[in-house]
Length: 100
Image (cartoon, rainbow, N blue to C red; front, side, top):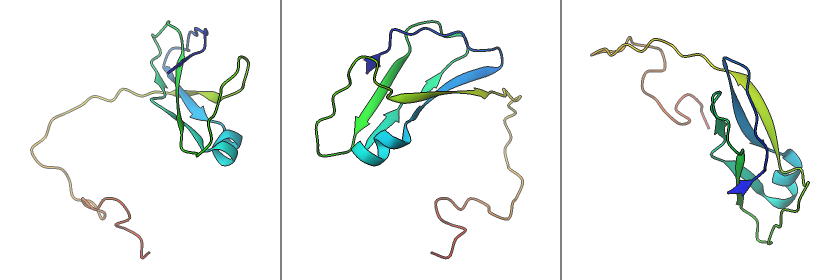
């Protein structure tokens, strides 16, 4: 968990998502995890990095290690039901709609 020493105030109705940088992922196999920042959070923005490469990866001050994406969020009304409507896909999960 890396502290950025950055605090942000997200616009109302939005949340922040920390995303991997393409160059770090492609060249060094570095990915980002645990990436949601709630709209009312005011603390230090932390970044969780995963190193899937074989080489040690060191983060230096001012390195560009991630993107911050601001997305709109929708809070739907949740209704508990006993049975869900049928769909064409049904309960098929991972790769259940493809031929490969």
